[in-house]
Length: 211
Image 1: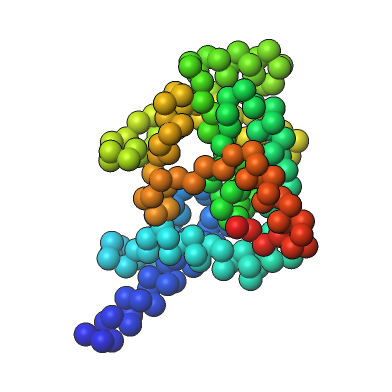
Image 2: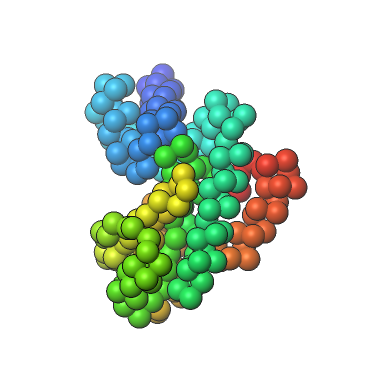
């Protein structure tokens, strides 16, 4: 039994490391997609051996520290600078930064993810069009605090070298964030002042080491 337990731990660790490598190097952003790809490559079909998202995020941080330590801080700072510029631009929609750029795990293909709040999604679309910003529209699905899932309109555009994703929520959704795909807790949303503080911290730490 003890040998089997050690083997399960070893397999779970290997899977988490492979998920981290896939997310860091291949631009796959969602945990489920990384898990499926890692399981296929390592020939694992047992759900009990599959790492959870918290374990994968920890492995991703370690992978970036080991293999991207020379450029990850600069990349993260550039993305956070883009986020800050975008948040100032969309100030009327009370933007909040979420996701890997905030968490410090953003890879080469990371998107700057912002949550906006507006009476109607068209308000944001009209603002983009009035600013002559080419964009694509879609939807993003989230798990709410009640356990139910809901989809919200989204818009995507490119700012310099970075992709920016906007998800538009109704004003009342500002009070309760959807659940994080990492740990299931309310998603961390950072306002303008918090992002400014992150950038000051990054600069003070010699280009930063994430959150």
